Image 1 (spheres, rainbow, N blue to C red):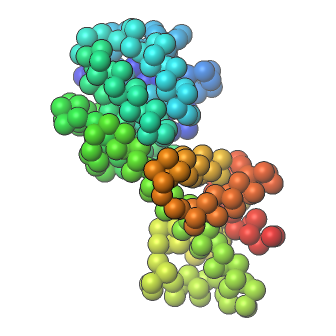
Image 2 (cartoon, rainbow, N blue to C red):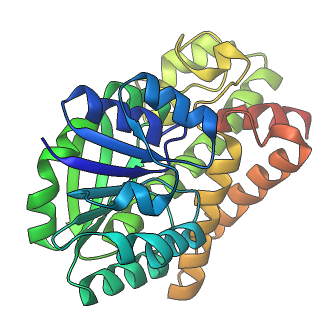
Length: 293
């Protein structure tokens, strides 16, 4: 059994922390939301009154935070100063590569092993413990973290050195965002041509148009019963989060001098949908915006 400090127990971090408790680990959690803390407390986690308190005495520190600025603040203001010698640090937030590498470097300078391990699979995957984890960091850190990663994720891929997990996550979600926008446009075109949505799904799901956004997350009601389209586009994965990830990819592409014009166009559609009130809806709800444009 490990003593784990878990900072950030919201929609994703909360279920992950609960799975660690269920597996027999001693989890101390901190979050700015009392509601989030109440949920994990009901499942057996100990509640800390600060980030520092969550870290003290922990064998492992996990973080799941909204953005790079939060990750830097938490690690530089609380984690590094309060962690014990030998504490393993795992950041599961989705942030920019440069910030991730900077925090990795600071951890190494202080003698800590660290991983960036952003996840894919949504709230459902976090609850079921079936997340895909894209991991960056040293071999030593990855080997030490394996028993913990196996509890919260079904698939774990060691992508390379520090920041490699973040790079994999932003590239994956850039593809996802583009694919969903193309699937949504295709269904709107089909509607205008009088083609039944189920028939388009039956064709494309077994033909060259097949992709995850179609077969697992179809943006129209009916063909995939579990998709958010059948629940008024309740997330799932909110449009605001998809837009965040798309913008991370665009910023990285700009820094690297890579042309991602297709992704830029898709990001503009998500941004427009978000500004029109869709920021809290599932990103597959983009079809509503495309239909009305």
